[in-house]
Length: 79
Image (cartoon, rainbow, N blue to C red; front, side, top):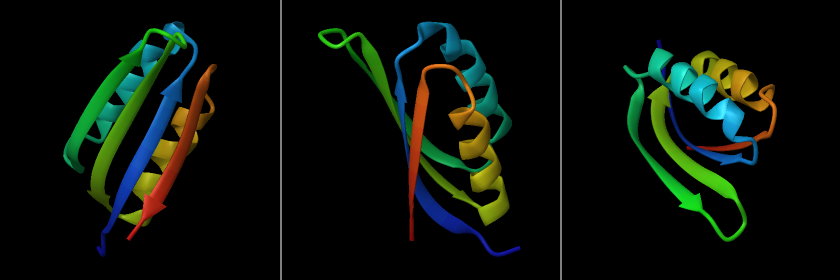
């Protein structure tokens, strides 16, 4: 199956959602190239960047599930 490379940006404003985010990312661990999390204490948010190489439907499913979590804002850029 053809894969696409994407950079997923996640901004977390509700710390209660972090455990669910980590579970969803763990489900896609075979496709994730790398991830970086940055706590931004001044604004009380966390910023997560994920590089992924996966089929389009996997990326869409992941971003959709993440975006439905409380206090989680997601955008993806594709190549």
